[in-house]
Image (tube, rainbow, N blue to C red; front, top):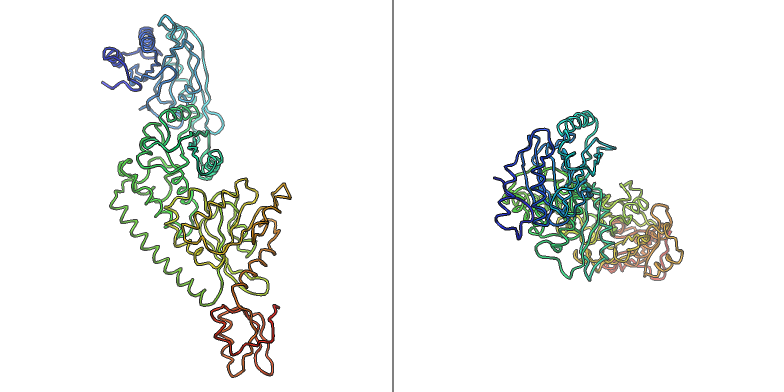
Amino acid sequence: MPDVQGNLSGIRKSTREILESLYKVEIPAGEAITADLAALMARLTAQLGRELAVYLNRRGQVVSVAVGDTRTVSLPETAGRRAAHRLSGIRCIHTHPTGDSELSALDLTSLKEMRFDLMAALGVDERASVGQVSFAYISGWEGEGEAAIDTVGPLSLDDFVAMDLAYLTGQIDRRLEERGKSISLAEKEQAILVGVESQSGWDVADSLEELAQLAETAGATVVGKMWQKRDRPDAALFVGRGKVLEIAAARQEKGANLVIFDDELSPAQQRNLEQSLGTKVLDRTALILDIFAQRARTHEGKLQVELAQLKYNLPRLGGQGLVLSRLGGGIGTRGPGETKLEVDRRRIRERIADIEREIRLIRRHRELHRQRRQDARIPGVALVGYTNAGKSTLLNALTAADVLAEDKLFATLDPTTRKITLPGGQEALLTDTVGFIQKLPHQLVAAFRATLEEVVQAELLLHVIDASHPLHQEQSDAVFRVLGELGAADKPVIPVFNKVDRLDNPHLKERLLRTPDSVAVSALGGEGIAALLDRIRAFLRRRSVDAVLLIPYSDSGVLARLYDLGAVNAAEYTDGGIRVSIALPPEEAAVFQQYLVTDEVPTDE
């Protein structure tokens, strides 16, 4: 005999046996309930002071019994049909100890989510009998597959018992079948966001707002946000047990099928939460990894994302039955795991080793390219900044690179390097890197280290800051934390305040420019681009020695080396030799001391 589910604490053995006996009850086909079963449920409800729910199939058999508390009952999953345009074949009848039979928002959401034939509430009065009944059913689909609900009641128990359920469900089935040929339920995931308010870090509301943007970027619809103030996360559930019950109720009420936490969960926390909430649970790390899996375009980018996902999933396999990705698709399942549903730890470790070897080859290939650039003495400049600060748009404005630039988080993932010509003719290489974010998963930093080495090797960093964002200072702090993790915190930086065209307060721009060496630009509108190029040029010139050299024609081969080593601003052929105005690296200046013209100051042309 199946077990009684739900809140069984404090229930005597004799009462539990009566609850178990409900499984033996059979209802005549076509009837919603019998008066005897309704009376028994009412007596048990009054005795326990708790809600009671039973599931009945279309043959009139009780297939599930659950006990709740005074306000609600957690409904078990149904084993009936769950096709997109079909009812489940199960009706849910539950009691309300308060005597009021009005269906709650949770009741109606459960009806939609589980596609019950019927959701009915029996109001149990002070005499431990059913005073009134209300019920609802799915009558059709609206819009993009949203279920339409018809509600009936309150009515007497006699009227409810006399109802022709077989006729009603038959009519509904035919109607939904016809509509289902052209309308399917929406597949977009409905997410509830959960955070913890602590003494350090961002304000929890701001952090959840950013998490909402991430969720929407990944393809989910955010239907609710919740948070809890705690000194430290709970070891088992991240949040308190009471908050977990609140999340479960909100998930049911809002029809959410995904819960996303704003911090990284341990494998045990994730398993415990999924068991408690009865739905898929993701953390911020898995969400960002999913976005990266969607955005990676190059072979290298896909390898780096796969490596990060495998390292993230490896310790979580035990709780998923040694399965790399969850069945069903959706956020958190994209990427390499979709094609391997039964991958054990050994095979995953082998795949990690294979990817790391391939990335090392790519790294050596990058080092060769980097060495050629260094030999050619072309300085490197890297764009860094918070995601969606406008780095790709700025790259396009400076180099006409035509790189994808969208008003989205992590719109571009793969790095792009383009040559830029500065005022005076000097050339530099400008590299756009992946955007940073607060709580950036360490798996991504490790996986993208080969790519992010462009930041470490660059002579100058352009820190692009979204000046219009209310949290631009907190975003800047997050960028410098990642730079510190990369070992690039001491790199020379030019702060570039982007999107100044969005500033309503003209004095704010003046305050921003008090930051040393800063430049205000609008990458989209072109404002400040010339000033930024001048600032880059001035910085690179400070890292070189200006000189005028006179090269005898007998040593004319030196001129080719000068072009390789520095920025030749001008070369003039005179009677005494070749007069060259040049900016040399400091370490090379002494080599050409014999050709130095000491009585002239070089000028740019």
